[in-house]
Image (cartoon, rainbow, N blue to C red; front, side, top):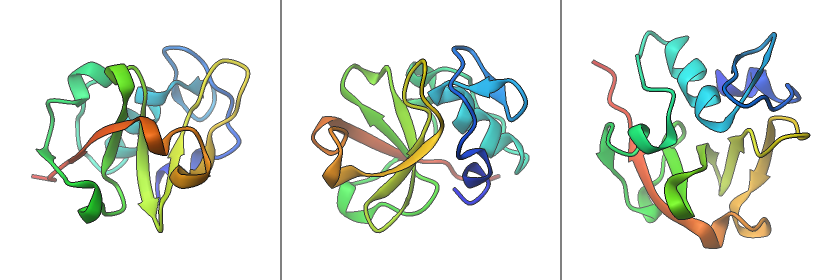
Length: 115
């Protein structure tokens, strides 16, 4: 999660996975974990099958959050906040789940275990 914070303010770009060219939501997760030597797929749907399921009440920084339809992901930070690349025309940002439309659309979380 700390690694992903370096991307705050970087433009959204569909298919993007770098600080220089931009990020889409799964590209941000792919990039942040990749900087730590953890290989993950660059697909929100494929990410849903990685790691282990985590209850909302047990979220920790770095857990991958999934939203309705599995077409969007973010990384949990702490204290109800996440970082994500929201959509075209936007920048990578930190939001509070409870104060955004995302909290009610959360459908699952996965903890990626570093090997």
